[in-house]
Amino acid sequence: MTRPIRAAIDPSALRHNHAVARRHAGGARIWSVVKANAYGHGLLRVARALDGTADGFALIELEGAVVLREAGLRQPILMLEGFYSADELPLFARHRLTPTLHSLAQVEAFCSSSLPFTLPVYLKLNTGMNRLGLNEDELPAALARLANSKRVEAVTLMTHFADADGERGIAWQQENLSAMGRTAEHRLPLSVCNSAALLGHPGCGGDWVRPGIMLYGASPFPERQGAAALGLRAAMTLASEVIAVRDLEAGDRVGYGGLFTAERPMKIGVVACGYADGYPRSAPTGTPVQVCGRRSRTLGRVSMDKLCVDLTDLPQAEVGAKVLLWGGDAATGLSADEVAAAAGTISYELFCALAARVPVVEL
Image 1 (tube, rainbow, N blue to C red):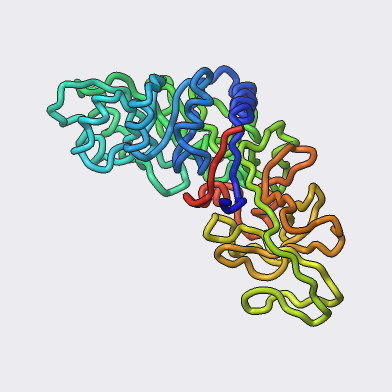
Image 2 (cartoon, one colour; image 1 turned 180 degrees about the horizontal axis):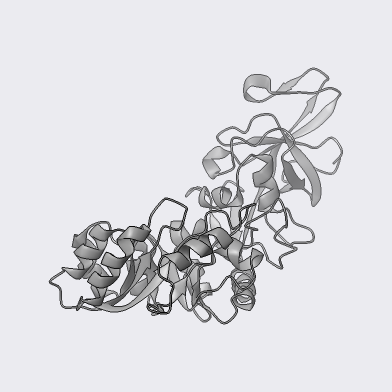
């Protein structure tokens, strides 16, 4: 018998969440962000689920883009970090990949290529996040070089919001963007909105939007508004089973370091799930789980292959009892955002951390 842990991916939830993004997009086209193996959900699985609705796919991994093309996906593909070496440009040309150019060096390497191709390009602007992107004083030279290049089919400006889910919002970066060339003299297409901007700042603008986390059914601002309230459905459900049951006396400790001490007689269950499966080791006692459809909590430190849960008030729970780690129906399931918050992290990390040893099934 195989180990009972499973991750289930729901294609209908992916399509539902994409439709939610479409309703918020205000007529803009949608880059479905599928980087990091589609946030742990499976690159090809997600791309095929969205094949009939996605306007384009966005990722950073060149090998992933090639996989999409070889699988027959014909939508535009945006490479969010462009190329890492000019040696990759033949693959960009062969597979019609749209590079994001975020430095003058990239602009020059692209424009000076001797390859016989033309491609659309995205020009990334640094409007305040201070990661990738051209600064204001670099933009004129980049635009001039692209305008004079035989390699450039079309130019779209893009930027990334640093605090669309926080107190500063997006207005300050929109002002910076306007100052950097979104003017009448350029009138270039624009891509700015991530999930947080799309859901939290109606009318944030742009010709293309780039939803990521919302496609997978989690909220970009879980402290303020949960996924269910946003109309999103969980695309990933992680579940396992109780593999052992123990009775504790008051004073007994649980797990490595004995971080949990029973204050009274208790019944606990050992679940086949640990940090080697992608469950956060940082999850403390009290992190929510569901056992037999009822809410419970973790106890003690998460170990590599196992974690412990409280069965004291669940007399029906024995070996083989079903355990929901996150996901499921919005009304009766357990939000990945809530589990992540208890562990001091975000749902993005939970999804991306799903280990290769966890079997994945499609609903």
